[in-house]
Length: 85
Image (cartoon, rainbow, N blue to C red; front, side):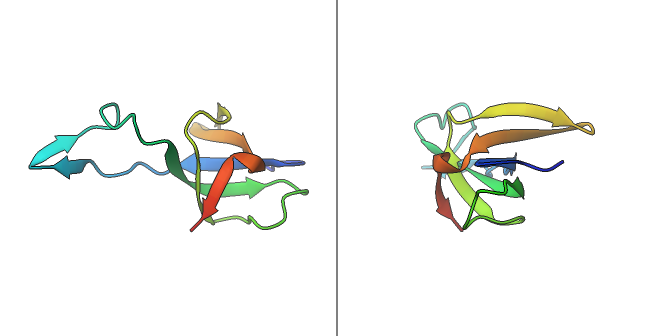
């Protein structure tokens, strides 16, 4: 699978539950977090700075999901990426 143009295919990285005063927060309880972390699987030919295996932070409302070879990925625009780790 290869992304084209300004699109990036990412695999979502699940964050470990966070604790606040001894209480564990699930992903659904942590909905105020705006950005999510993902691993780049493929970057389109017009994307300049981002490359495969980079860890990126992207807007939680960006893109759409796609299933490929029994795995679930997200396709987002490079402009939705705010940080490369």
